[in-house]
Length: 435
Ligand code: SDX
Image (cartoon, rainbow, N blue to C red; front, side, top):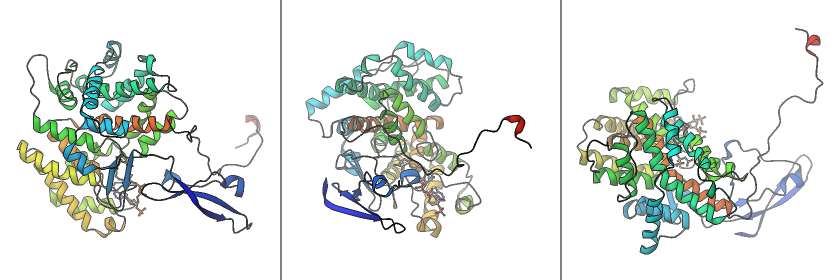
């Protein structure tokens, strides 16, 4: 919402000034539009990593990094975690309101109906080495969806946009489980639409044709909670990647594949895999102080994975929920194998939170710090951790994409730069270049 408020930027060298209109949202920092800046002062802004730049107006997710608040369409993550389920959260993120019972039943039926994948696409898996990282497979097969579903790639058609949204939400678990089955040399398990969304995934992951498979309700609830917590997080790197890729009119399947590539990085969604690798490298809590010292040592590139966040300058609210769920799950599963890892994580958290280096930089555990321990306790292999994040975040990426496609202000994303290269110079033929 814009009001009559403006900010004035003055170039102290030339005395030139420009007035820029301010807009305020429902919550959070106000923004001023830069559209008059280059015309008025002949300048661009410089904001590496976009730490202070709002790229869009959005009504999907709100984060208050100082308060540790996370709202999906206005609903606190803590309440959704306690009362909702992942597919209902998908509906909320996509359509903006909690569904009526009939709406939710119809949505569940639609998602169920799209859970299978074209047989030709499943044959792609045979082309990957048995030890291909599942994220490498997901980047490939999700992008390849656009080669099979031409009937929903006209991004200017709202119906096409909705059906491709449904297809991606529905097919991601099937594609994800298939990437795991490929890596263990087992046959791909087809979806069973009599099961719920998360139960269907667990069955596709762990069932084998030779015997019946029963979903553990404790595991199902823990995974559903994880999916809710990872569903969206406003303009994070992967969501911004999906927005930028699709701002050119690229189809949603290819744009989500770009988002998957971005999420794979250890500074982003790849952190959940990196956290468990870090915790597994610690043989006992006695080694924790040494690891914390390495994380503080500027000459050492090591960072405490699962700590820090661009927005949260205190505990990530999702980490608090996952930490408790981790504790409950390990107790309920009686999982002795993962208890030591959890205890090392608790000790690492305790020491880091007492350390001035971390306190001065507001480095707290983020969503990835404990999530890997839960996934491991559920029997999800390390290489599949970020794929789980993909499965959950697909709805967030799609909700952000649909919002952008409906936003009259949005145009192709094309940042500018500060050029620091050579001035104009003439070509020198190779025989005249000298040594
Ligand atoms: C996710 O954006 C989102 O919303 C992402 C996400 C989502 O849901 O989409 O929340 C999911 O990606 C969570 C983050 C997962 N990544 C990790 O856990 C990797 C470890 N964390 C860092 O790499 C880092 O904290 C980032 C990438 C998360 C944030 O980086 P910033 O905001 O660019 O901060 P920075 O790199 O400028 O660090 C500021 C200072 C630096 O020290 P100084 O130069 O000021 O002395 O803090 C230090 C950094 O060296 N620092 C760390 C640290 N993270 C930052 N030092 C040790 N260990 C760390 N983890």
